[in-house]
Length: 166
Image (cartoon, rainbow, N blue to C red; front, side, top):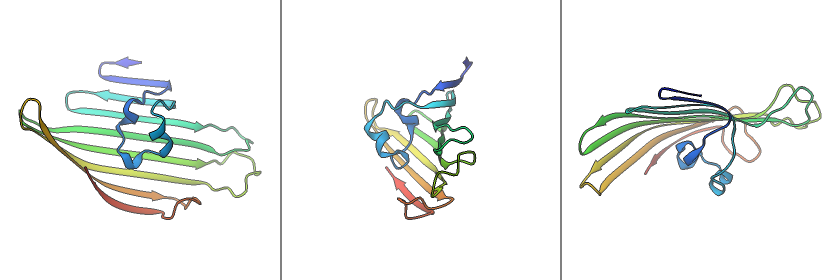
């Protein structure tokens, strides 16, 4: 459903350019297959100053008594154009990625439960300077934060922060 500058989708999601996520938020399998199918709900908005992509992807949907864990990924990428002059551009990018593995309605056959939730957040500055009509210099920098409700077996930390310049 498309209304003015707003696009809403239920079903197969639009994930062109992998929702414009920065590299630390992409998983290995996403890097290998850019045509990865995502199913769920999505809200996209595009104007002169604002780009928004918010989505919920059900990796594994379960019903009461299922013998598997539910898995879902929710995310949001937002770029706000703060300054747009003839030679300078300044954007504020914000990204969130939320991953949940577990479930409360599955059967007791799963041992151990290994239920966890991870949340990755990023905020940054994107500066672009046009030297000529065909050449420009761009600098992107992000401050990232990660937190997890518990430690999955393959992760070492429940929280952390990093500075990520490009």
